[in-house]
Image 1 (cartoon, rainbow, N blue to C red):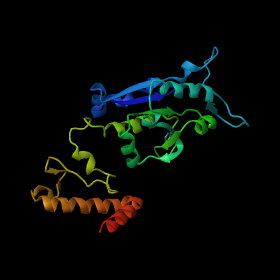
Image 2 (cartoon, rainbow, N blue to C red; image 1 turned 180 degrees about the vertical axis):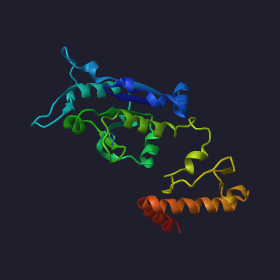
Image 3 (cartoon, rainbow, N blue to C red; image 1 turned 135 degrees about the vertical axis):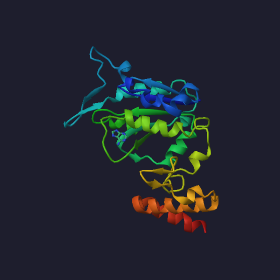
Image 4 (cartoon, protein in one colour; image 1 turned 90 degrees about the vertical axis):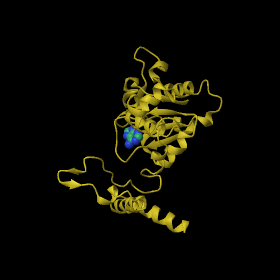
Length: 238
Ligand code: ADE
């Protein structure tokens, strides 16, 4: 069972969308488990403060090192080898998430995720713990809760037993630097638009050729960065 622990000041955000579809089914089937840790549990005083103003001044509040540190320690309490459970902090300052990273994370025994809120976290946490700072894109969310659901969903769908058809993850977008080709289903004609003839031909060689061509055209058009990688790896394989 792949164990997910999430440190969040908004535990009500979970399981959220992670309770639906194939990922929700995998949760019920114990392919993975989910536990939230609320830092407030470790906060002191009447107000149970988890955040404070920034040293040196400036706007916003930071999650406190002492409270978050205790939450991280709680995640690793009954774990023998920390290496099997990477610690990820979701933040817009992090390394952009890629499918290759998702694949690596899916091969671990689990993951511990820290969701940011407010203006961020005390730097000493990042210096003290082996934290990987990960971003899900070049935009700013109000906190890491939704980002963590994005990350967990991308991992869980790769776990053995989550998807019925193994093939469906090997040909998909990003597994070879190509975006997925267009797909069609019945009805054969919709708003007077027909399904491309070749797909109804039954000729699998032609269908595969057509699909590859479409993937290439689409990738070149919308993702020149991926297209460059694809062309590079294609020439090095020759
Ligand atoms: N928290 C706020 N914005 C984020 C982003 N873009 N990625 C990950 N975590 C975030």
